[in-house]
Image 1 (tube, rainbow, N blue to C red):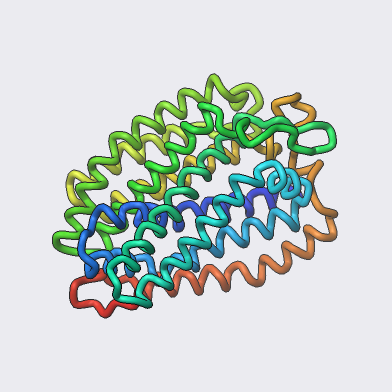
Image 2: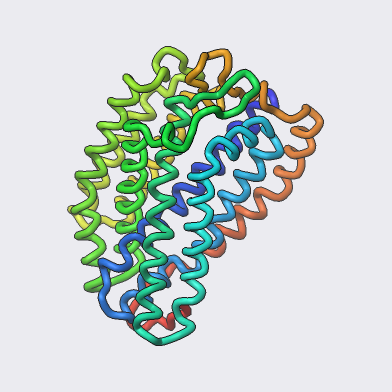
Length: 337
């Protein structure tokens, strides 16, 4: 395995980790105004993700930094061509982060209601637009011989991409609802479980529709980098199993199944793309790959040494933080947010 392939895998792992962990954050934020009407319960919902949301975003920052260092050509085309949607995602994440910190600074109901809806909007926009972006990666966008994106913003809002956005949006809402049922108890946990049960059939339907549409809207069948084999089927089956576990009130297993769905779905995308990182709709020879966008072998070697030292430290720390805050948030819990 060469260093180009190694760093493609590492970046894929970083994005997968981000969507698994930040996915339930987005879902909780979207559900916040609807599952609780009084301030105490809303604070309980926010405190289920309060210790984790900023740590989860480190995965995105690391993935972006790794992309810039390992594949500067990919980074340049991605962040210039997808500038507006990525800008909207960034603004939403900033607005959401500010909302978490500012909400409890004043007890005025209007103040807190405003920031509750800010958390909702700051969670909804990224949950939708990440799916749109990933669908465009698979479908292909107009990239010329100079590795420049030559389309516009509206090129990105095609039907297949919007369907991808719906997949991520509903998937994250389901993931977040199950997480809430795990982290709370009593009436709030039951409401979260009912929300998960209501969202589940729609999430399953759109992922099946998206999988079917991918065969017609993309070239993943004819130009497979790595054959994903049963992985996409596993994603659908895991999501189907999640519904059964929700019905049986086995929240832990339901959460595992939605996490597996996200992992398998993202793995399918990256496996199907390889060695491409962005597909050009103007011609197969114009697509960006791990070879024509990569840094020098020396740079990749140095990065590999640094990653070998620091990545385990970060993983251990984040695992420890989840262990420390593993308990459910109850009516008796001292709330920070």
